[in-house]
Length: 368
Image (cartoon, rainbow, N blue to C red; front, side, top):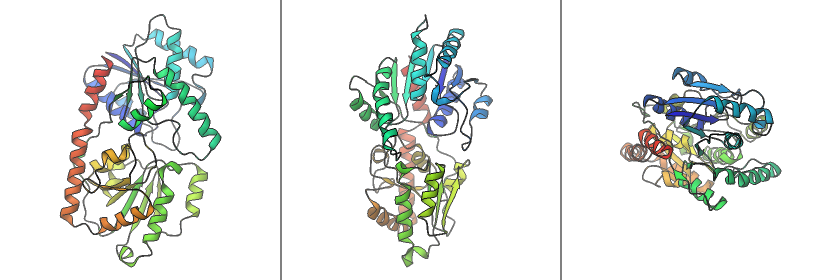
């Protein structure tokens, strides 16, 4: 099968990491895979381009600003010529901008393109702090849903996105195919005496970073917590203004901003508890990664995270800051047997519901 994946760029995030896993399996199964990229990678992220090149994937990258691809006529003409010169069986898009561009190109092609769309998030619903921009996003996504309707199949990565999408456009009938996660051979150990909490992901208002910092600094006022020599590691990138505002509210030196974390395995192996206070997610790939590394996980009690974590069984759920504080203190009191039982249950959840091969076979079925 000749497949073309279209995505904004290869700056490593949830969608891009998932795409690499998918493409690797597609090539192993004998498919011919190409990538069409809408622009340059982001400078503050690690690029996955070399990883894709190592798989002998053919890459075509548009020049010019990504935000204008599909809007400016030249990008549409480039896209039309590209698809005319390559007889793809499947064109699989992974972002609203790529969905829109490929849709426009398909209108001018004599041979129809079999378009598959994967929706990786609840676009337009995340807190960005700018009312006008958030409103424009919501309007754009509402119109975009009409384009998704014209695709051969629409894939979503969680039931939560499916519910959001059905509310947005009831005529859509998406297929739920979660990301595939590989459980590493070496999981988190518990040798360090330091009680280290960790967060990894984008840094913005939607992620609940302020809540995490406020709870941590309140806990530091308690003697039993201080005795553990606690640290809080925050990995990820965000806007300069947001990082500045976060730093202004921090009064403790034990909070470390790591910036972009390239070696995620080392990060997860350096912490005892992973806290994911995000208010809204498409799936929460980083939560799945933490679970797969044998890290005790605490996350906000919202969909889809509360469909991944069974409270008290394979992790903990919290509703507000007071409950988060109580759960962190509860996690401190877990003995090794209790913790090992929860960690084992978390890994079993990954293996049962988020296996890589299950993801690949489901997408292959959607293609056919």
